Every structure is written in C-alpha cells, then in structure tokens.
Image (cartoon, helix red, strand yellow):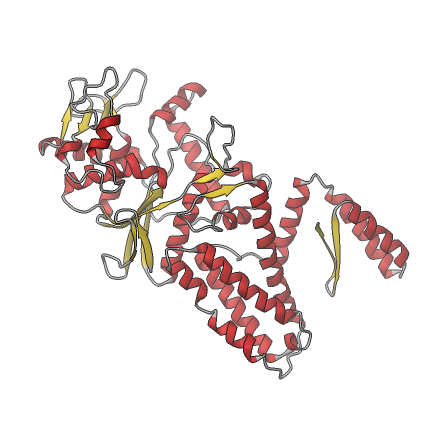
Length: 483
C-alpha cells in the first residue's frame, strides 16, 4: 500500500512499525458547535483508511480525540449561560449522531483532553527541566521553538520566514515571538486546574501530545490540511523534544471542502453543517460524494454536485436491485458467458483494491466500480445470457465484490429496494412533491390497468409526468421515480 507522507512530501510504501499492527491517531473536533462538511470529509477519509487496512488483514488501533476545553467552548458557554462541560458534552454527542448516520466507525479510543491534564503537566515539567520550555511570572508556559532545531520539518517553513511574520501580543511574556503556549494561566471566570505554575488550563497543541503518548510511536497521524501548521508542527516539536522519539512515521492530511469554488467560511455565509445537508440528501449520498475525489484534492460542494452523486449512487443500487431480481426469477440454463465479457470481468477483480492501495484513490476505485456495473447491466439486458449458469456465477461474484466494497468504502450495503425508495422520497421532499398524491394516482393507475382501461391508465401516467414523476412497469409491478 502506498500513502502520501506530508513529512517527506512523496508517496511511500506503508509498512507498519509493529508487524501486522497499526497505531493511528487522528485529531478530532473541538466540541463547541455542530460538525460541518469539512469535519465529515476528514472523518470519512480516515474511516476509509481504517476500513481498507483492516480489510487487508492489518490489526488497526484507531484513536480520535475530543478537545473538550477551549476558548471557543468557553465563549459559547458564556454566550448561552451554560456550563462549559455541558456545551462540550452536547457537541460530542452530536458528533457521534452525525457520524453514525454517515456510517463512520467509532474509534477504538476516544480520549478527551480534560482526562489528560496530569499527563500534559508532566510534559510541560519535562520540557522546562530540559530547558526547552519556560514558565512566565503570570503562570503561562511556553515552548522554546529555537530549542528544537528540526522545527518546520512538517510544513516546510523556515524559522526566518516565521520570524518575519511573528509578533508578541500586548501582555504576552514570550522570550521569542515564535514560542507557543503549552499551558495558559486562567483568566477570571474560566475553568482551571491547579498546576506548579498556578491555576490554568492546557494550550491546544499539548492536548494531542498527551493523548497520543500511550500509542507512540504512531504509524500514522492524520487530520485536515489546515492542521499541518501550526498544530501538527507544534505537536511534533513538543512531543519529540520531551520524549526523544519520533511521534509518527506517516503524516496524512485530507484536502479542503469548498462551497461553490470558495473556501467554506461562516463570515462568507456559505457554512454548511452535516445536518444542513442531510435535511435534503440521504447520508450515503453525502458519503459517496465526499469519496468521489481522491482525499488530498480539494472538493467543491454544491447542490448540483450532490445531485450528480445521487444519480450515480442510484445507478449502482438499481443494478443491485436488478441482480437480486434476476437471481430470484431465473431458471438457470446451461449458457456460458461470452469470452470477452468474462475475461474483462476477471481482469477487473483486483481493480478497486489496487486503486485504494494507491494512496486511497477512491475516485479511481469508483471508476472501476462503474466499469463493472456497466458489464453487469450489459448482462442483465440480454434475456438469453442473464438466465444462464454463466450469468448466475457472475452475479454471485458481483455480490461478493459489492460486499468487499462495502467493507472498504462503507457504501452499497443497504437493501436496494429500501434504499431506492428512501432516495426517491428524499428527492420528492426537496421538490416539495406531495408523495401521498403520487401514491393515490399510482393506485388509481394500477386499478385502471387491472380493469384494462388503458385510456385512463395513459391519462394518469400523463398526470404523473406533469408532476415530474416517471412510471416504470416491471414484473414486480409499477414503480415511480422523479425525472
């Protein structure tokens, strides 16, 4: 398996540090608001990585933390007149609800920052004793960036470049503008913990150093591209300076989500929460959309892009539905498959796994999936071939492949008929279509067909078409969808 390593800026062969076992740590959310689509992409990307490695036989220990004390949490609590712990708990719970809907597996360990205060203080003490950190008279603790010569190795930034843009804010007691906070003296009204430097609370970066320490050295440390600097850069510096060992062998970062080609931002008014999107689309559609591009590339969210993802996902589930129907009604005959179709099918067997082995190229994997869908549809459309034993064997192999894709991608695992009905109803809600009215017209049309009143049947079809409803007559009865 090849993974792009931000640290070395190239794709490398991934080999676990411990044979057969993988330790992976991914930075989780700061629990002060509902998750947005950027959080969804990061969670789904690393869910894909965990699923794929496990499907390849690796024993993965996956750790994802929660920041449950922070300036934003405290500010939200003050604005709402609530306890900061209650705010954090509200949005940790909301995170789990959103991720469960998106079929994101729970992490094996989900440490919270406030459970690791003693460990953070131990790291601060160790760095101070080594001369790599210092406490100020007011009770802040800062890391001496220049005491760690490799600083900048992850982001590629030099100390000279950083120095040019660095400033010391009024009231700060830094020795150097580049230094960053490990521990912050508590302000009036803020939560605090007792420490050797007075009442205070942790800085942001120190949290992950404490929470990842039980799993060091990590095989993989991950997060969004926005975390490369300063968070992950600072995390490397303080961890490696304190413990003297490498924090992580691979650093993996997912690309940004843009809204209509612009960076998502609350100030621009284009901020999209997961819940906003799932008001209009099924969770699997959002997951499918977010995996539609290779994880390091930016992805542009728009209703049009979601509609396209929905149509593509619908094609896959329609193929699955038809395969299940063909298996139920066929009286298998001794008919073999054309050699060219069978050869192409066999050659495609490893294609999805190979794409994921190439730096989790889910976009390429989808391309291989649709090639196989086209081959299966070609078989379904041939009334002679689809009833043969060759087709039966290919259908069984196809369903086995779909199960494997589901294990790796977290997609295509629902009952096709149930899923397609849910998708149809979701589209109807987006278009403010009265499904009860449609069902009434469909029932009248079915009755007209039973009575062989084809004039009325055609009239009702036209009435449905005027509503944007397409009607299909199948061996299982009439079905409807939206144009």
